[in-house]
Amino acid sequence: QWGHMIMHGDALTVAIVPVVFGTIGFTSTGIAEGSVAAKMMSSAAITNGGGVAAGGVIATLQSLDSTNLLNLKE
Image (cartoon, rainbow, N blue to C red; front, side, top):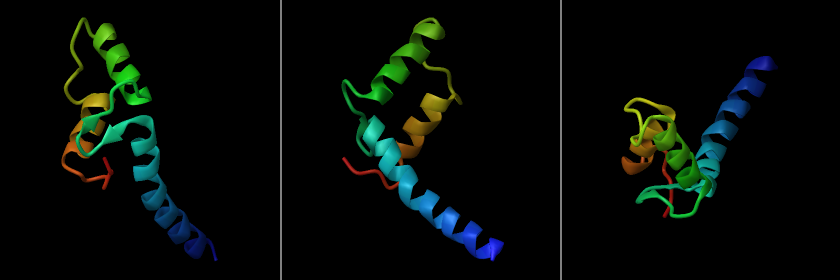
């Protein structure tokens, strides 16, 4: 029974993650202007003295969306 719940949970996660990231502004064409993702990127750049840290959360999500690994829509 637990195995079935875990499998359904994994499938739900796979289905929801692209929707959530697309909703906050990570798209296959980049970060949407004026979005939550744009604000996150701006905050990260300010924190890091003007640039987004390589390997950080924002850079990683931007990389994933640009390769369409998350199957994000424009």
